[in-house]
Length: 200
Image (cartoon, rainbow, N blue to C red):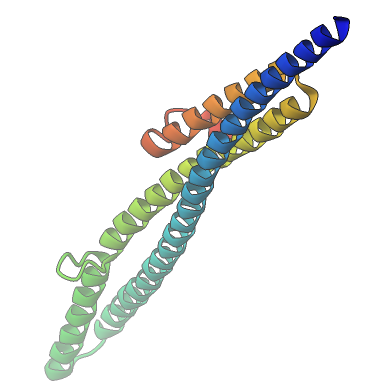
C-alpha cells in the first residue's frame, strides 16, 4: 500500500514539476522575445546616434571653414581700405573700393545666407539640431541597453529556477523582465524622462 502512495506522490510531483517547467519556459520565451526587441531598437538608436554625430561634426567643420573664409575676407578688406587711403588716382580708388565692397558682401553672405542655408548662422542652427538628435538617440540607446541587460539576467534567473526548482528565482526573473519592459518603453516614448540612465 505504501508503494502505491509513493507512486502517486511521485506522479503528482512530476505533474507539478512539468507544470512549473512549462510556465518557466513560457517566461523565458517572453523574456527572449522582449530581449530581441530591445536589442534591435538599441542597435537602431546606436546607428542613429553615430549618423547624427557624424553629420554634426561635418556641419561644425563647414561652419569653421566659413568662419575662416569670412575672417580672411574681412581682414583683406580692412587692410586694403587702409592701404587705399594713400592712393591718389581716382580710378584706382574706385576699383579698390569696388573690390572691398565685393569682399564685404561675400563675408556677409558667409555670416548668414538664408537662400542656400549655408551661412554660419544657418550652419550653427543645423549643427545644434543634429546634436540634439544625437543626444536623443543616445538616451534611447542607454535605455535599450539597460533593458537588454535586465532581460538577459531575467532569462538566466528563470533558467536557474528550472534547474533548482526555486520559485523565487522565477519571480525575480519576471520582475527583471518587467523592469526591462519599462526601460524599453521609456526609451521609446520618453528617453529624457529618466536622466539617471545616461549617468549609468
